[in-house]
Amino acid sequence: MNQSSGSALARLTLSRLRARISSGEWPIGCRIPTEPELSAELGVGRSTVREAIRSLATLGMVETLTARGTFVRSSTAAPSLLLDALSSYSPTELVGVRRALDVEAAQSAAANWTREHLEALESAAAAEMETVRDAADPSRAGVRCSLFHGVIAQASGNRLLFDLVQNLSMALDASGLNDRIAENMDAVALLSEHDRLLTAIRARDVGAAAHLMALHLDSQMRTLTQDPVMTELAALRPDSNPRPMPA
Amino acid sequence: MNQSSGSALARLTLSRLRARISSGEWPIGCRIPTEPELSAELGVGRSTVREAIRSLATLGMVETLTARGTFVRSSTAAPSLLLDALSSYSPTELVGVRRALDVEAAQSAAANWTREHLEALESAAAAEMETVRDAADPSRAGVRCSLFHGVIAQASGNRLLFDLVQNLSMALDASGLNDRIAENMDAVALLSEHDRLLTAIRARDVGAAAHLMALHLDSQMRTLTQDPVMTELAALRPDSNPRPMPA
DNA sequence: TGTTATTTGTTCGTATGTATG
DNA sequence: TCATACATACGAACAAATAAC
Image 1 (cartoon, helix red, strand yellow):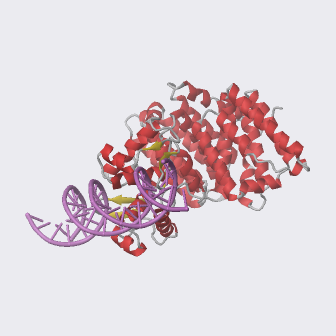
Image 2 (image 1 turned 60 degrees about the horizontal axis):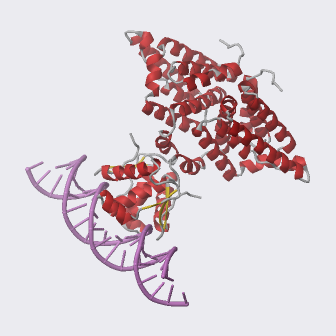
Image 3 (image 1 turned 180 degrees about the vertical axis):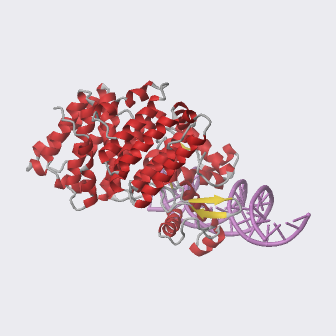
């Protein structure tokens, strides 16, 4: 089931600890017992406990702070491990996948949002609006899309989609690509696109949400003219979806 | 940069080992030096080496066999860690993301395929055809889509997309969902859809490829009537893309 | 078949640095 | 400033599994 190599005892220790986390016995934010305590309780040596904890840390489930203890960060192994892996792909590959996920997120969000989701979306949009309004030069405000897109992914109700979008955003942040987009794109136009997207989602117009998100990403990718592959890809979706855009 | 907690020295050791793997100094299948050798060479304790190796093993990059040594399994951390993580999501979430990725793969494949890709696609389609032709009841042949879709993802030229699609397929296999689809779906109809998809890709018709893939996934999802959420989602994409389908 | 060398698995002891009070 | 607790870090030692002779 698991790719884990290594010894039986260390693997057993790892699954025992992981079971306590995913079962909720050690909730997120909780500090787990110290290494000697776990060593005595589980009947294994400290080094074995340490290796198991280190594996949990590389899976992103716990974080150990020097001289403070080990804290639960996630009940699942999914989110944080993706980030490191994503750094080995090219920006073109990252944005290609991001477009796929964001379009799916937009249409699922339009279909599945709840009141809480909609409120989060509207407050995220309001925060962006405020940033632009307070800026000296509104067009150059340099708004980051990540938050708004993350909230949309959350509204989709698909946790996997949300996790992937979040980690992809972090990878794009790390690569500096999001900065280039934010710098090159007109913030007022960006906000207008977000606003239309929000309107479509609120109206539960699934097709419009998907289409607007595709257009939104295309306009972002067009700001990255340095990379010819990206602009080529950016030209694709509009051709495949030539329906007039609803207001 | 890294989510990894733990000490600076252990993290540094991990980076040094990982660099040797991703740089190709230790190619896949290669046995890396023993723990005492690495300990002496890197100037750190054997415990520290062991923790770094255990982290690499958790990431799926190496596998250590008792008393035999540690072997390189992957030059990147991406593939294997996804599989384990995906098991914690619901089938609905998995197929939702799969739809997004497969549609993107289809349109990118139509835009980017090379001669080798096209040949692989055609031989995969031919193999499916042969399976159905040799079956006693062609409609109940139970063809697995995974291979054909995997080749499409490869033809997209996007390695991340390919890795995600492959691991998602494995997760769906593990959940038994692919079996349910293969059993419930008419194999002749499935092959016809694959054939039209291949035609669109060969013609570099990006829009048709995206649309046909969306329709293809929808018809698969409709075979899973047990889950109302899936059928609801399955109805979405055609509405958002009502253009007449090219032959 | 069995002996031996090699390598990983596991435990323990101890030293060191750091955060907290 | 000092004391305590905790985590990191190293190394020694033995156990267990494997391969080669």
